[in-house]
Image (tube, rainbow, N blue to C red; front, side, top):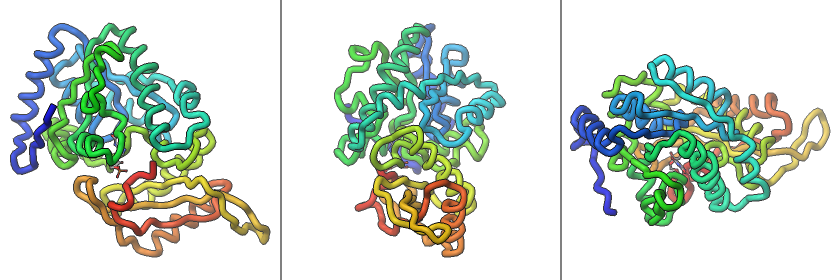
Length: 321
Ligand code: XMP
């Protein structure tokens, strides 16, 4: 299937919402659809769009896969609750960590997350709920990069020729697939979402696993989660497109309290970009970088070194995995 991009200059948000709502209603009929909210811009917008169109015929789950940011499941469920959209949190931490155990290859980790998400956790939920449709916030950039072989986005299935009906028992509907991120934000605004929700920096489907180089264990995720919280606190006012922390696989020699301390190293990345296709590192104030480094080494046990990525995408990517 060839997907045509709707560029920002051609996007009429109200018309887009009306058309997609009609398509959704026609497809789902009197049936039931489900979707998974991650709290990122794309899944938040698709959740709001889906609930506006389908109301009680859409059930939204937040899958707590154990690799989300600090307090994320509870905070997101509360924010949507305030909008009148009920969210059910599903605790699937054990299943995801079991699937990720022993894996360090980036594509294998992504595949493990995809399979656990679609086949195990979602497959079960869909079966239990009786839903035949899965609403998903795939966007144009995801398709482009997957088809080009740049990266296997976890939410691309049909584009890879995977028949979800045959394999998982449900049909995937992707209302945002013709839009890039700025278009998605426009739809979020037109849907009346709070500014902070549709203007959040993007967050990857594989969550913090995209920021852990090497094996994704509960302990290593806990470490990168703390580092992420610090980066987000310190850089939220930077106006940058995206900022994140990565946990390296290699340990390095450091020094603490006059003793050599063989510890972890964190890499900070902060990006200027409009569509995530290309990106350049932000020219951050050195004082901010030093503050981030001081906080990480003081607040996160075992961290002895913090670096800042100065490479553009390409050749770097925004995430590390
Ligand atoms: P990369 O790391 O490929 O990321 O330069 C480009 C943009 O996409 C986000 N990202 C993902 N989003 N599923 C998503 O929905 C994924 O599997 C995924 N991987 C990366 C990333 O945060 C950046 O904004």
